[in-house]
Image (cartoon, rainbow, N blue to C red; front, side, top):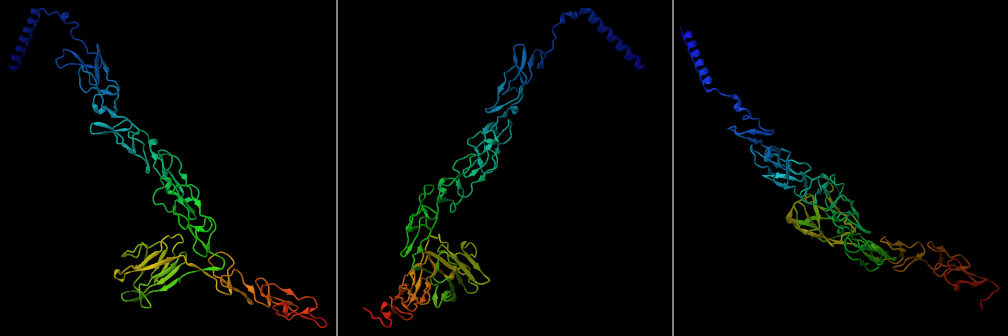
Length: 453
């Protein structure tokens, strides 16, 4: 019964609608051309009354054109495209400011593109951070775009954008870039320069030469010397010493030898400190270039320093000082180039033992004693005269005694000759004779049958 009733209702509704359409006599041709498709890259408004350009496109006459490189449009409509932020660009038809990417050499900081700082670079368009230059290199300005914009720092050399190597000994580099390190001027060295060799002033005059750092170095003249590297002046040799040109040290004159202090000391313990023969903290004397051994009492290792300052340490002492705990000995070998006159010693464990002094000397040239000689410049000891010879103090050679002759070795004066102590041998005059060891012409006497006129 229910199904029959629904069918009758639907039949009645359809008949009524058909009557209405027939009654108004609708002409569909009247709507022809009033419904149209939107142009490419556009869409209709919500009320379907007009067509507007898509995001990324702008209205140009009757068409929608793509936003150009460096612009964007983030909404549907017929408005214009907006410029990207400074130092950025975009693809064609970008729909968001996020599509604006920082140019080479720039990186995004918040909402702006900032230039890469000095020491950084960025090779590609994008929002990535700038990259650091390789170690020991930098850029010459902000906004660098290429790895090859990274140039080696002062004191380093290497190809742009690649590994930079520190300038070696006796070279320097005072400019940024890939250039090679420059060689130091003649007679200069970098051996005492600390840190990088970034200026020509790192090159200092060698020992035996004098001049300004990085400048022309002139050899010390004969009779003068300079024992250290640096700009100091040459100084005159001490008394009884001399030198050749460009000397680092002076040598004792012929007839003189280098007198040096003792090269061994034995420190005991007394009055709560180091002592020798009851003298507390005696001043020790060491010669440059000569190893000096200083023994110390058990438990009190001796440390040597250039500063008059106690340190609670057994390390960090000078490179030319060796502390041997097994033998309880400290050995000091002061370099010849040492320019000071005093070192200091103290116990590395007990501050209360105080600080003693070490006097540094080059030794003095003393005259060779009688009956000894030295025939050349140098610091060696004098040589004793050979048998049957003699010399005065300060001699460069020994002379045969009277009654002997020779040069170096002395031989007995033979018969019929006389030897006057000058090293020469003289024959007696004809028809005269003399005994062995004769010392003067008076020792020559006439033979039988002849008389001296």
